[in-house]
Image: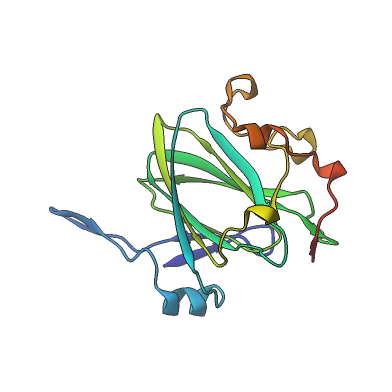
Length: 184
């Protein structure tokens, strides 16, 4: 596995080693031993999967302490633009983001640590997206930042007027109105 550090400390892109032949392909999508050695010791406890159509934007989500979630995400069908926004108070990259295209072809994964808001836009006709989380979901700890916040300067590659959002995601606040519970 090849680990690519991003310009923001914490989020990392993972490229698996893929073995291909006439039968198809094989790769190890997760190994705790290798992940702990190359990334950081993380105890993933819950796997999630979503299916979405073109134009859907999910996010920007996080779980408030003490129920924070680090995530290891990948797109197993289709293509998404995956985004992590630094929301750690005092961070030199507060409000900055990392965006990476995750596709069924490139088989990349993206690690998003605690202190980041996470979201993705669907770039293909449909996309199946998987998340490994290091904490269980707690609805009372839900938080979010608006995907339309101009200060974040995120190009979702979707026309904002045509984006498909959940009711909950339409109500998230702008970063300037957000009192972050995360410290750098």
